[in-house]
Image 1 (cartoon, rainbow, N blue to C red):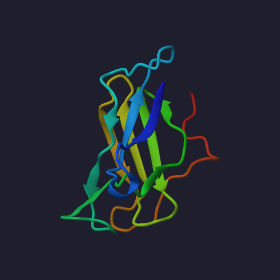
Image 2: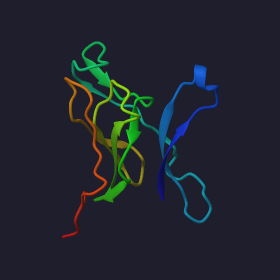
Image 3: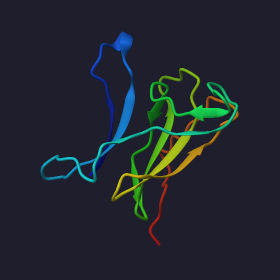
Length: 128
């Protein structure tokens, strides 16, 4: 079982927000594959929030909107805004389902802002 969870051990005013991907044994709840895996990515871009030509994933501004997708040995996570407080970007991030190593990343608007991946009503993957 994979889950996604924010983590912080400090009061809100001084909080360093982090988001992690967890792979848990369904019967015991024990972490698997050396997890959790910190979600931390950046892509080239000049959009809102960019620094030195890179747009970084901001766990305070990004919120997972659709369910996790397990397909072809990868776990896919999608992101949109958290309360529409910018800057935010639409992200799709893929992790290896057996190692939690990051496999791929897509920012749908690295030269802009206010985009997101929602996907609640659409099938993201179909069996063939």
